[in-house]
Image 1 (cartoon, rainbow, N blue to C red):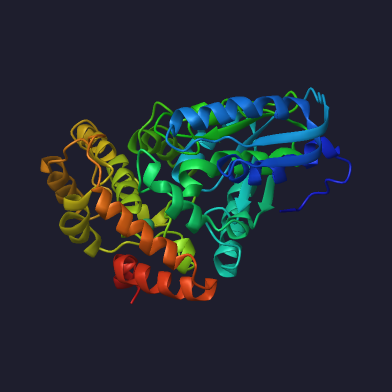
Image 2: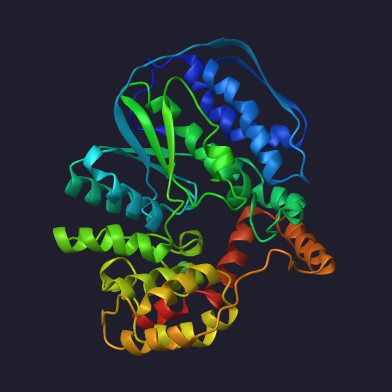
Length: 400
Ligand SMILES: [Zn+2]
């Protein structure tokens, strides 16, 4: 991990937290001991609760290993300032806007969703977050991590995802993203941060679940998870749209999980996550092209023909549908007829008891385990081919 601020004066018991939190779940799932010389006492004591949370969420996995510290130390800093984990996504941006009166410092982890070797994209993220922070007159902490390359996450996913309640999730999404990101920030907090805010959707089994996030702790710092009660559209309407109207400034949103891997585009504008964010912006009366989604009118047909019939995020779409009559606005040309179509679209709520067949899952994870044993360069080449054939189409049309 790499910090831009000096952490020379931070006690070792805090400095070990990022390393431990990055390797923790691997040790637990493999039932081995993770030994460390010194560790913050509160953090050390919190780990049994975190492990319990993981075992409650994923009872078929069995997290067993132990963290052993030769020495623990009680740290109290009595700090008052706020920090917020800020990826520039819709959730963390809306959460920042919700609490902006506290002037929270931004903690932006580089290497989490966007690989560090995507230099162009990393540069763009830094610039975009800097522009936003300057506008808001707040401080930023960039933290670089290569933990997603150090761990062979693909292999962990192919080995364990079939035992997740939602077998489509990856190791990072389901297990690691909350623990690792929180732990990485620890060395930067003793100086002045007393409360850290983390955007999460709460209750479904994933790495940002309340059963994990609310149990992680170090020193006397408070971790505040936020976001449980809002759907994507509601957040955008309540916080983003109001801010845009008030400041006449559009924070750039980076919501896509595909673009950062294979391109330097913030958003592919073709995946479902991009599609429901764009639609939420349209319904809220925001022109998505000013928020980081350079769509053209091909987007509407593409979403109707391709995204709606294969939607996975039914509850998000249904929430957007429910708000169409109440908050109607023509954001850009043709958005009205698109929203009319959406209003009449049938989305069946997802049922937890419907899972892909065991045969299908086993085949999928066998292919994955072969794929993730290939050299990294070959993996990347194949991923680029795959994503470019499936995604990025609407964007490409808009910019060709
Ligand atoms: Zn996308």
